[in-house]
Amino acid sequence: MSSVDEACNDPVDLSFQPPSSTSTSSPGSGSTSARSDHPVEWDERKWVVNESRLMALFRSCQRCGIPIEDIKVSKHASQIKVEWRCLNGHQDKWSSCPDTRGMAENNLLISSATLFTGTTYTEIVDWARLLNLQIPQKTQYYAIQSTYLIPVINFAYKENQQQLMTRLKHDQTAEKGLNSVGMPDAIHQELTRRWKSLLHHICGVHRWEEDGVNYTCHHRSLTPDEQRRKKWLQPDSPAYKALSSVVLDKKLLLDLKQMANFKHTGALEVYHSAMLKYAPKRLHFNYNTMRARTQLTILDHNSNVGRPQAVTEAGTMRYSITFPKQTKDWVAKKLYVPTTQAFRKHLVELVLERRQDKTVKYKDPASKVQLPPRPGNIANVPKPPKAEVVARSRSRFQVNEEEND
Image: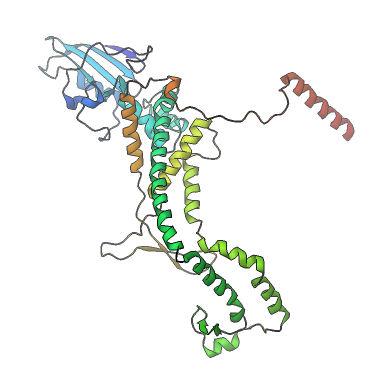
């Protein structure tokens, strides 16, 4: 038996050596034909198999049962290929996964799963080494990342961005219709009125009249005993006058107009949390990778923002109860439907399509996402020799030591 470790094959690359013959295996046995001819989907179930258990299947011919006399094993990172011939002259080939235009499909899938789920090659390779699990080497992973993964993320991001821009333009057109009836102005006026009503409440006045219209506080009605026990401010007291100067401050009242379109920051905090998953602060990424990971964060966020509240089988809204330290009381929180990462499968499909594209060349700089113009180094003086900087630093340390003495 012979064993050969090879790089993945790619007909358009000089570094690749295409298979010399096509497989005679049945479609369900792991053919080495192009992925487009393979009937099984890429997301079929996969298993971790020990090599000794796998090779035990090739001791006898699958056609006649006679022992196999010649067997050749070739390995392509996560893919293993077996060629054999039995004593009766029967011969065949088997592959652990199909090829996509000469490249082991599982090598593409492992690389895609690594980046698209927000993990890093360093984390994956540590896990794989402990199991002695075969995955693409570092150079192959980063070549796949730059040639296929990052361009696909950039394409999907721009596609999603265009869809959102189209929807926003439609929403803005609808919003103009609301503006024509003074909707924002009405919200601003109501917000200002409620803000000024604070001056009635702090004096114990919960019903009043303005411009012929009767208003009330929005809290529940107080009992006579509660009304009596509260320490209300007097209109002629220094405390009331100080608070009134704040409430009626002209600049503050103008700022309230900006509050008419106020939004909670919860969704933004969720986005920042996702950003830490795809681009942890403690790790450094080059520009292209950082941009791709930021785009992944946006795709993930946009796929899950605005999820509806979950319901039980009976159709009632689902909640959880918690005991926050701030309120020191049990509160109910809405439970939402689970998140979805369907966008990741779409990205994998795009990766396989890009691999099938013969105009895209593996490791070719022209097939990578091109960097935009970036400003030069922040240093405004030429970089001096390293020895000069070290000598200057030593001299400074020596002067400090002499001064301390």
